[in-house]
Length: 306
Image (cartoon, rainbow, N blue to C red):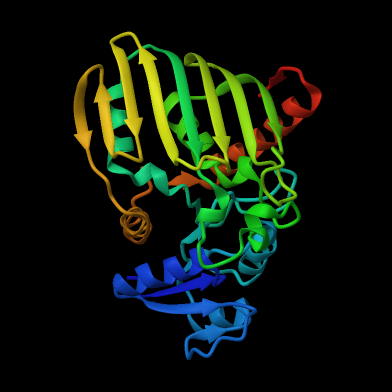
């Protein structure tokens, strides 16, 4: 039984993981390059792994550092489960042998009760047209810090709207199946002081669905996050903000869990060895690959085959 977790990175998401894991009763070790006045703090990951072999490791440092962090874990011959915050890597070309490692990727929206209900309702249906939307004003994401200093605003640190909101890409793949080809627009509105793109729209043709539109941005002053699916039995629509799942005119689900609950469900699944709803490392790499294809399609102004 695992009773220790090692959290790598102590930014906002790292702190969230630490708090939730402590509430689950685990002994939580923090690995961070920062100077922290904490007894459970290590500055070196290899020292923490040596002290706590077989611990559950959560990688919550910057995306651009994920490959190096996983490489260090691989070198240590660590045998415990590993969760990597999304996206898995900043590039699909990153050379990192994780095939023998027990790695999953933190696409936590898979654990939303309404997503599970939506997935079950789609079984056996013919999916025609899909619209997926996610938008929130970046300066409001992390009220305790200047948005211009966040990794979201920095290309070198692995930020940008496509990777930051890749939850939507993962959900589309998980719910709808493989993509065949895409066209895309991607750019900077000029409304934010960042060096990454702040809006993206993608048109997708799928293997198991006819067409989908993905629209994501850092600009919405009125937050939006929804999935609307036209299928052979009518319309199914999930609104994350309102916490509702509708099928035609009927509300078939109404749940509004907070973020901590979703992270707790994910941690509990990993600790229990239940991988049914987890994003595998292979699926995580697929998402990174599609992010790159979106950038290529937008840059070329032409359709790209997936």
